[in-house]
Length: 201
Image (cartoon, rainbow, N blue to C red; front, side):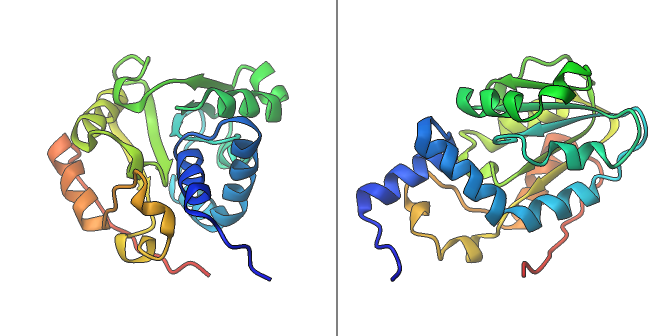
């Protein structure tokens, strides 16, 4: 029998999709790894990383997919920035050896005001986080600031029409289509933009 969610439960789920916290947040993070496996793997495959590059992920959750990123080229460096202190702690725990190696860092912070120097990253990617950005234009400007010249920015989403099926969206979600994000990226200063649409299995 399918579980029936109360409105309070849906609201709590929405809160933890935005910022996973506590035991429920850890469960939500694990479920996101499962439900977002396709979109994560496809995005990581598109990064086209080269040896020695430095990549930033916004909203890495519990860090489950970090090893997949590092497989893409030799001597990569990875930094993960997440809004949730609990997810930073989980990522550190799940990737202890990679952190000890010095190739991987996890930092708690807000994407609209990152702690990074200008021109720091060869590639930046984020998956299913733009729904929660307080100001898309300012956030894209910040990501453009920390992106190296000729660097690449990847924003992966489920489009508005697909997201409408989820009851959580009425609690703090902003929905987008790829073309809307493309225009915002151009306004932020990115010179070449591509919208790639994939059908999830």
